Length: 412
Image 1 (cartoon, rainbow, N blue to C red):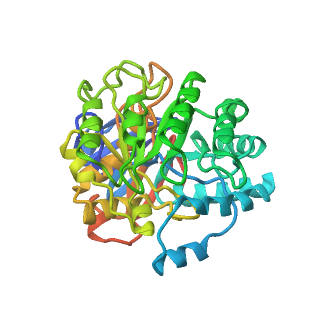
Image 2 (cartoon, rainbow, N blue to C red; image 1 turned 30 degrees about the vertical axis):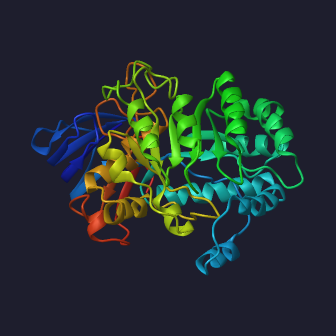
Image 3 (spheres, helix red, strand yellow; image 1 turned 90 degrees about the horizontal axis):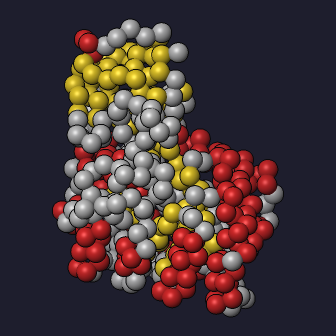
């Protein structure tokens, strides 16, 4: 069944040509976008939705979340707001609660968080393991995650559990734990940071996961300058996330990773994440986390000006960013990171898709692109209760989601 969405005041495609259409319309056919253009030229369809002069965007692509958890870290947040500094150690609190929660409740909690995100315009979600930190619980987290989100990342290298030797745990992450989670995940990540994993340990994790056929990501440069960005670029990781503290060499390395990119799919059709010729490492900025941890905001303006592709993501997790509001991240990027509205929306849609290797794909290859609006792409759409995307920053804090379609199905 096809659906015509018409009377769109502004259609921000975020496609390769950065088109913004006025007085537009769009046709959904099944899960795909079948047509878009001027409303006066729209073809007939089985059904019609009147957008009422509202703005239509691609659905948000949230490329960095931690949704598989139980427990509460309100006390830690209150302490941080009172002046205590953030460290990686709080992860252990969530690990204990997550291990003690049964499969049914852990799944129910994750599904509730996904529903909350979708109700705010998010149509494609990544999430990570990392609160199990033993073989059985990491495998369980990966299995549950694979039933509730679109992309799953293995983050056994989140923190060394209390009482374990760091070297022995790194070997576990690279061996039996990796084997246990492998059927459920597409990506692997490592928290390369003081208090978490050293450069050498991170290198071993990335190598083992690459050898296992996983796409790579890195938590890097959150608490200070360090090797995270350098490792991510060296290993051809699809993204390096946080990037609060960057040296000039870090920015140059990220920019250099994109020097041969032509804006296409790198010849990989989206099938092999982060490995296409000319494709660089996305710098994923997590502004909600930066505010919660009172870290400097990631230098999104500097990265864009240097030629780096960036993404915005929520980093939804119980300790440092307990929000799934991508609109809040976009608003913050405009008001405090000096991005334009168009740049911020692009980072939260196409940029997230790029960080997940899902920016390309169409009718021919069967893996439809997300994060942009073009014929053949997945019909992931976010209709705002406003005439333009500018209202996301112009009216901060106002819930503007009017309707959401996810793979062509009305989801909100």
